[in-house]
Amino acid sequence: MGKQELSKRLNWEKLSGEKAANAEQNLYKVFDAAFSGTKYILHRKPKHLKNLYANVSLNDSILAEIYNPEIDLTKTKWGISPDFAIENTETKKILFGEIKRQDGWVEDKQPSAGRGNAHERLCKLFTPGLLKAYREAGKIDDQSILPFWVVFEGDITRDPKRVREIAFWFDVYDKNYFMWRPSQSGALLVEHFDQFLKKYLD
Image (cartoon, one colour):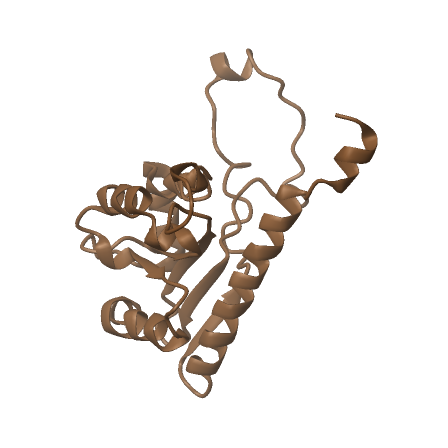
């Protein structure tokens, strides 16, 4: 493909990034309004987990096999940055959150329309190390709930394969995700939080 043709192509990463930014902004606005005058606040891109990995101890045999430079812990940011976090300012309990916007297989589209992997990237949250870190940072010890909430947006919320896939992953923790479908208002998002998740922050 020539230079001219390439320049005419849509930059998929840029486009998907813009879509994700719009999704985040919508969620932020909804909760900023809902939490106004309450004990709850919404953190945008919280930094609570920004340096999770730099202090991980490795045994000498592993250190001998890897590149092992001096690490400046005051500058290193080896961690994760969730999309949002909801905090109860009285109890200091925090629920961390991710926004996953993705295309999907719906009417007038081919099954290949659901080929994105934004939803797959959330699977790291289920790892033993991150579950422990989220529980410790957010002070959510109750094992009947996960210490994070994932909000899905876009056609993935109506994709017959992806919706089943996500339901299978979360299993009994079905309150820890929300399919914010295109036709739904922000009130339903807040209602889900109020009904199923808020009590774990009290």
